[in-house]
Length: 431
Image 1 (tube, rainbow, N blue to C red):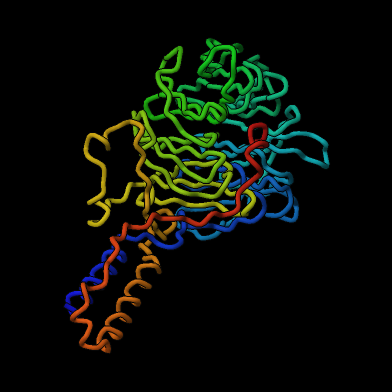
Image 2 (cartoon, rainbow, N blue to C red):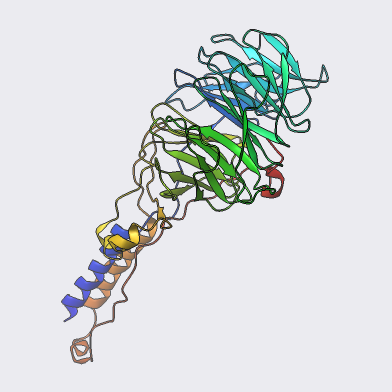
């Protein structure tokens, strides 16, 4: 009886060790870049460019753009700008455009950094205000002017704005398609304005808020590989999906905690960051969040690298998080977890979300799984029980039964909570 009981305890400990997640976990590789990393874009060759919004920490001259090559643990160089970078854009030839306020000139500028240059080679004056700019493949730059309800257009190679296009109230972000068409979110109007390449006016306006005449604070916008538009509605707690050529929202994907920024991978997977500390993942043509990962609280912006890694800026933590492809995939349940898994019909429900518990450690790739200390503690306790049980007297044989064993459920992964950017209440009107 005593021997059987001891084996039962050891078996329970092994089950807990196998089924339990780590006691703490990283949400990907963390790269220290310094300053206030806010904006991020990926160049044609897969290099990540990270803008410093603080205006003086990355370089003594103020501001700068960190260059992070695939697999690097630190920026390889800092491109000088002379001002804090609020917005970044990159054209098909690798030319970088950085927006920021130059305190010396008392002027909002767009700095132009040709591919291979050590910093800004020329500047273009624009209207005051932090601008989340975008660039067309040919180098045309679109600058949303939130307070003026317009979008400024800068032709390729120009040193000044050529035209101003009226759009919906409170323009915030711009996405540009392969054909040069620009799509502009307007926070106050609750719309997306469509500007064809070379046009001087909006061709159509798409209502993205759930109720016409109101706003769900559409903020981030991105285009999928098939031309579908994805719009993050902060107060609507949803991502609005607009099909190519559509004049209205095809459907909405529920995303909790104020979705604000998003990016789309080459395979059509949509990645969404919210004001809370999670990254929601929507599979191609998905109508619900497939699963989510814990990231820094109140992240900045994000971008998807050619190999499928997702890079997220963490302004207050002075870092960027690199989430490798394996970490972004749902992890198959262990044998213990599988016993309590939902039925096939339950798993197929659109509202069901699968919480990822994978942990990886290579930049741009995977990290080894780290076992939690709780499981090891149980095994240690079981070993102690074996020693004590051998010293128990023979009268234990006459006791009513062996020690009861409580059935243990696998623990949930509880990632650490890194420091993030400003409070959610202020993020709607920040870059």
